[in-house]
Length: 184
Picture 1 (tube, one colour):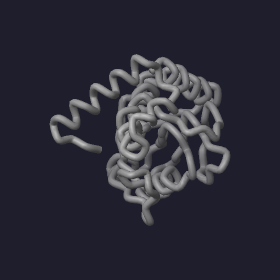
Picture 2: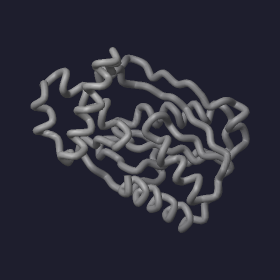
Picture 3: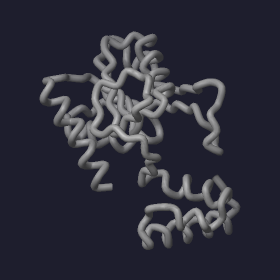
Picture 4: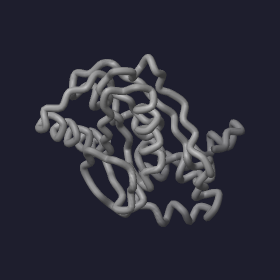
């Protein structure tokens, strides 16, 4: 989590260096939730909204249409919006949310991500790192490993770069989820 703190601080530094001001921060759920909250703290912006946008289904299969819920017109109309997500991969989700916020009447939409993929096609104003690697964020480790274990069995843990302690914790959580009939 320290690296997420550091990357978010880098974004804040970039925004301060450009002397940019915003009225509201909108985080894309679920990946943008923590970076959005950190940026709110770093920048002293306490008006936060969140948008749920999904392009992929529960099996990491790309859907045919982007599904967006939120923010409301009241949240963004006439406001300078800082839009935050964790990664801009294809860019379809990010660009879809940018378009929606603009359609709702935002005065400005400035998009930031922690990581940008080289093939991204969205308008990304700020990012910290560009990478073609598959990133497993701390908030999605259980979700991703559960899907990989269902596909590849426990060998999936051997291919991950997770520490033995994290692997042990994830295995325990997956066992508890299984015992309680919860499957992602």
